[in-house]
Length: 292
Image (cartoon, rainbow, N blue to C red; front, top):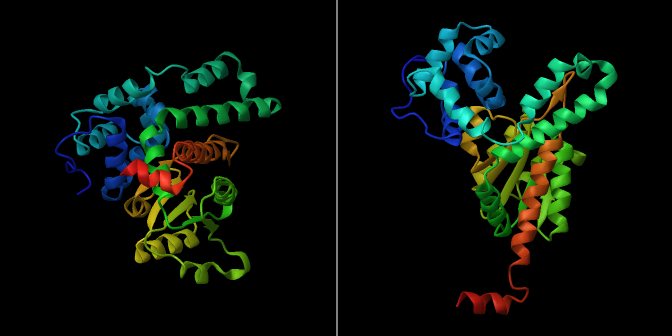
């Protein structure tokens, strides 16, 4: 089952490839799933390294990369890389390559004494990659969804909590009707009873995903609430439950992952809401007149 062709037509865009990979990730064999995970997590690496280097990283034969390409509808893995290169390598200011070159030229960049500089590079890389990959239309679509929501609920626990709390703060500052769904005083489960159709759930979640997050998403689905997810590459179950998703690959050093790219996306989203609100008539009567 894992080696059959899953797509009759190979995706022609990076966004289409990512979406198809997520959709079919659960149908792949363990080795092919490794390739899928690397493509979702580090597409720039897949674009820039050779098949031999990628296979070595994954500890799989090079033929595994070819099999992955074939089940996704491509003749060979070269077509997958060509698609990614066209999207990433042709873009200006490729920070991943700059960082790699700097570390090759000066090994001291990776030394513990340069921890601050290395952290700064990882933050810069992840924010820049996020800015390149995030379609502006997705920001506009989400901003319109939140503007028209009867209520907004924000959820995030563990490492995701600071991002969720900041997003909640920003939404309140631009006048959105918004509340946090957290475990304060053990009130998460009773709070889920307030979910209703017409509202929007904003979930911030990072791997390994917390059971509480699964509980909140399931409750939203039962209540007819639209879910927007901010996450690292999502597991298959969360993909199908999210109407809109923002995927973040945070920078990491010495096992610590940054939150900078996630905060960046929250800021961009709320700035887009504020920008769109500023273009609306302040007087409801004016709004009705403009629409007539």
